[in-house]
Image (cartoon, rainbow, N blue to C red; front, side, top):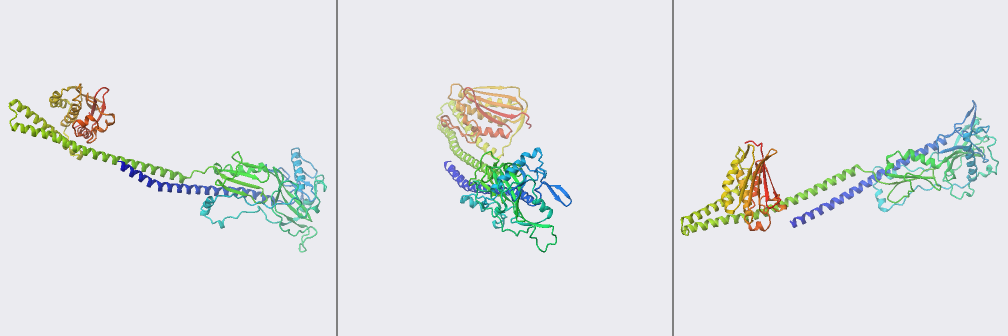
Length: 637
């Protein structure tokens, strides 16, 4: 058994190691695939945010150059500007135009300078922002920062080569990152004379004299004055080579419509006003003058809007954390309630959005990977496989142990049978020789010798019959003669057969039988079963002071029960179930000094099982044990 256990341990190790390696690699591949999927859809989410920014840019770029006045003068009359009412978006404070001389006008104030009570505070804020803008509009614009990159370990970079996206698209064929949302260069736009008048017309009282909060037009060269802001200006689109400006005095000679003019419209750019506001504007060049038109963006509400619309409702929000940050300002938002840094290994997506939103960056990392159906299936398969392996090994071990135990018991049985056969044969031979030599001088002595010969012959015959019965029962060739009765004949036969042995050994036999139903049983088999049980009680209890055997018969719940109780040494608790196994003998001093083959109780069990019954052994509260056999009371012949 020790060698068998060693072989099984070696087998487990040899099977478990490659299985564990395969499971580890498979789990790793599933984790990388899940990370690739999360990264792929994280990029798609950032694309959606960028698409909204692009829509906002296109909307503002497509506005007419004269919409930044309250009232538009047209050929058909006057009409309110589309911007004359409060913006629908909560993150836009308002629209205004910065004139060449630094003066201010907003579509929220009409030509009569009437401001409704609800708009006074907002107009004052826009006027103050215009004053700050006049101080900063000549600050040199810095290049947009490079797209957000995170240094990743070499191992992680290697994993990226087999990422989710790389399995379907080559890197060279992926969408190139945009550098600008909307137009990339200044464009020339044709406007009517009325639009030109609306653009250039000043509203009384809203202008500021040059040198106060404004600046004269001759200052507007390249906007390259030193910065007085104390912090980097927001990234903006670099000025492209200026498109030829055609003013009202420099119209193309081939134009037939003298009432049409051309203006240069530059791409949108952004300038920081304070930590929470950004002025996003475009430059309008006409007649040698530059106007700046745009809107004031409230950063915190704007970032909250992007998160609420594009991130919070998505399932990916359960597995990741997204931070939107305005670079250089104190406007930052995330969905974890704490500052989130990008750590190598958990970073999945990052982006600096194109101009004019180059100040806005997004950082996303994994909080916990979503459960993969394939991972759950793999875990289930591994658990089942492990359980099957363990169950198989346990079964093999117990089977091998059972076979070895049976083999050992068979070996002991052969030895015991040899001894049991040799003893009666020796006695028979000895008494025959004594009779032959005339040692028995009297007829009484001859009768005694003949009785011993008959007893030893019966003992020898009984042993041989037990072996033959066991063989027939194992081959299922034993036939049973079932006849109806109430066990009275069985109890009478047992008492008659065992009377001499009980008297010789000094045992007292008590039989208690109640009113029993008629049922089918094999009389000879039951007699043999009870004799086997009583012989065991006599054999192991002959040296004890109290020698008593009690046979009880009763009917309980459709079963007829026969119990044989003695006052012997009992059965060790660990062997109560094993005593009915083939060739099993309790290993103690008593069994080693007492003859036996281990067939008696094994035959009892096999007989009862063949007749649809059952048997069990239990120790008494006092000395001895009780063997109880049960037979079905409704059995028919």
